[in-house]
Image (cartoon, rainbow, N blue to C red):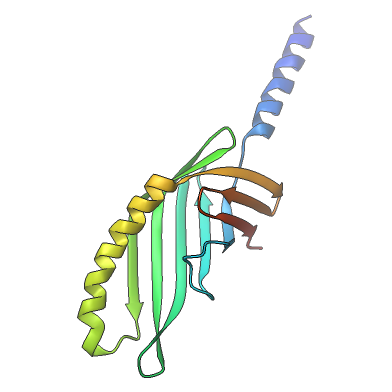
Length: 153
């Protein structure tokens, strides 16, 4: 009887371990968000079961036929409540390179505002329905967009 109880306990522990969602790793993100400029590259790294680092890179055409590069880093945490994945941004920092000196100070001042707006938006809208497609793909569906995450190999 003691062996049977031990076996049942081990199976229960194994089943609980298998049911935990794990997204640890680095992922490319494709989004259907209408607000994201074409060519924007998004990526996320999830680690330690709760830490999140996201990046955004895009080139923006500026007068004179040149392109400025905008880069964003978002650090925070994530958690699951059932099939809902919650993202919480703690620190957001956007920067731009390739700007002409004539607009550099104006754009840098705007970046501070964009940092705060992005952080607030993530923290307000950061609860999205999680759906695992396979071991290398999952989706998050929110009120305004759907993102597809593909594992970087």
